[in-house]
Image 1 (tube, rainbow, N blue to C red):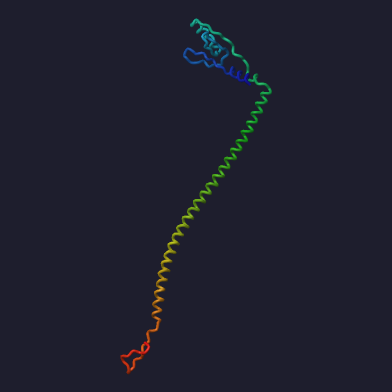
Image 2 (cartoon, rainbow, N blue to C red):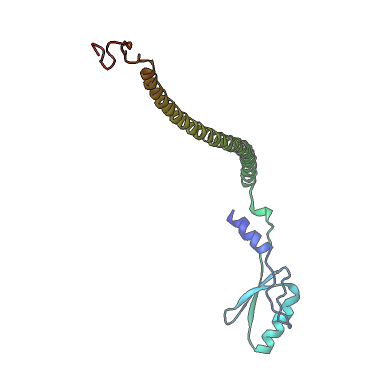
Length: 190
């Protein structure tokens, strides 16, 4: 695989020679150059004369070597290609499985969200019912207290009336009939 990577690197090598306007050529390179002072780079066929002209102007030399011309496919053997295809197919199958699992999880999440919303709505209804029941309970408790007070007052009034009835039903003290004999006398026994 490393030979394929090297072939890929040489297949995409670009010209690094600076033009007169200061820009870099960036055309596909076919040559590798190295100056005496150590600077090096890649050059396209059109920029090689420019390198010669620069060398003559600077009174310096540079070395030029062709880049290797291997295709990308020649670095991959049949077995490696088979392994790559198998790995690609396995990755695609795994991707499809992960996508299905993600879709399943998304659907589960949607269902759970609906359940949570329904439960929240029920909770709101229950809380409203509880508040209403507590309000009714408070009203009933107030009514009960009022009835207890009324019952206590009624009981007190009933007791008072019973006491009055006892005194009203009691026979008056017996007095002796008035007789002519003893007008100022008290009856015997009394």
